Length: 273
Ligand SMILES: Nc1ncnc2c1ncn2[C@@H]1O[C@H](COP(=O)(O)OP(=O)(O)OP(=O)(O)O)[C@@H](O)[C@H]1O
Ligand SMILES: [Mg+2]
Image 1 (cartoon, rainbow, N blue to C red):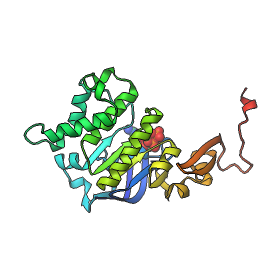
Image 2: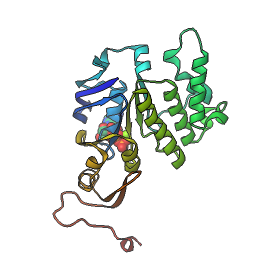
Image 3: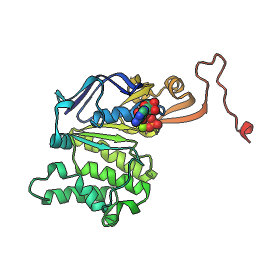
Image 4: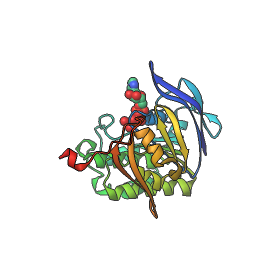
């Protein structure tokens, strides 16, 4: 599987959200999308998930135009996990929600394999004990785990995740991202995920795209993309970046005025007290 994005632009009415975005991801690779609020990350993921149709440019899946795929084909190809807090939960149980992920694969009913896939997704996300609970009764982190489990059960060729770990505790952040990475590598699937946590992004993504005002500001290895200069220019934050055996450690130190001639104005703790 290979995902190719070619000169994609998208605007909400007169508000441009993506401009001329081009990149490729191959099966087995995890691509991380980072960038400040409003930089176009979710819009990009929605274009890839075909929730939105770009006004310009084309997205190819294994050379096939995404716009030409239909119904079930989309369900088998694309698994999309929206950002936490999107939409109201359906009135259904955890088990029903995850089983729903198998829909694109079902033919004459639920097979043993469907149940095995659902059961392993529930186990992986620690949801087995909650299987009979109603979605609306869950905490936001638990609900996010259900959405991830549902997309995993779908076994998509391309896995699209918008801030999948934002509501997860540190253990599940590691477990979920570790599993997603394994899924990409072992099954040669494409993973594109939006992450705000730059440390996790550098650790679990093979490559990063840094979006800024709807454009690709930088793309490449985490180390090349998450330089203090790039972080400063896009987030307006002075950061200290160091290499560790578990990826980069990015410490945001203080907001700075980008473009100001003088030295960055660091906030000092004493000034805030
Ligand atoms: N439904 C919408 N209608 C109009 N404008 C929108 C809509 N959704 C997003 N936008 C605008 O498009 C731009 C990109 O938004 P997007 O949600 O893609 O950003 P993001 O990078 O995901 O931000 P965040 O980190 O806050 O999730 C922003 O300027 C935003 O205000
Ligand atoms: Mg977003």
